[in-house]
Length: 263
Image (cartoon, rainbow, N blue to C red; front, side, top):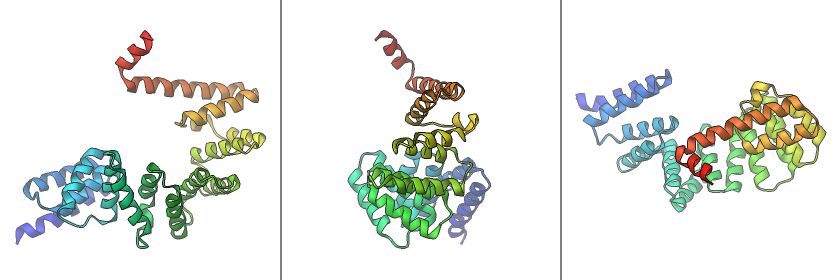
């Protein structure tokens, strides 16, 4: 009688810890229980999902494969499996799984983002847009969906006014997210609306500019500010680009820096 109760108890403890922000402890609880019950597929599945959320992707893929042989994976588990296939280079397997999930009318709207991201990774832009549209019907005030739809519309080569409208809606829903404003500014540049692009960029604070991680966006914004004679914002952008370049060189390691110096 004791053993059947162990699995749900462990799952509940782990879920409670995770919801309270103790993600590492939650994962460790499941690991300890799985040493006792290595055939507990539901625990492998739950641990895989938690690991995926925490960015421990290789461990997540290993755990979800263990669960696959023991229990149904559920929607989030299948997304973990598809993401693992992509990282391993098994694009056909990932694409097949993602196609099935996209076509599933019962797919939960709250999981739209990992499905969207995986579809983008295999450049299934039309399917990614379909995911955005379906999610938007159920979550009309989700600014992230509007932003994703804007990006996908641009990838599909749709009229730029459509992306522009989605970006403006995203900003209307969440004006505190700097990614939306920089994306809107860059879209306006592409459309030749330089004055409005500059005005939009000028609405961003220095702290927001220093949070931009896209080098391409930073370079375009820098050129925009240089053309406008805006020395202050040009300095912000140049500094941010230098920081990103330094971080990239540091991440590449000392060997690549040495090779670059020898060149």
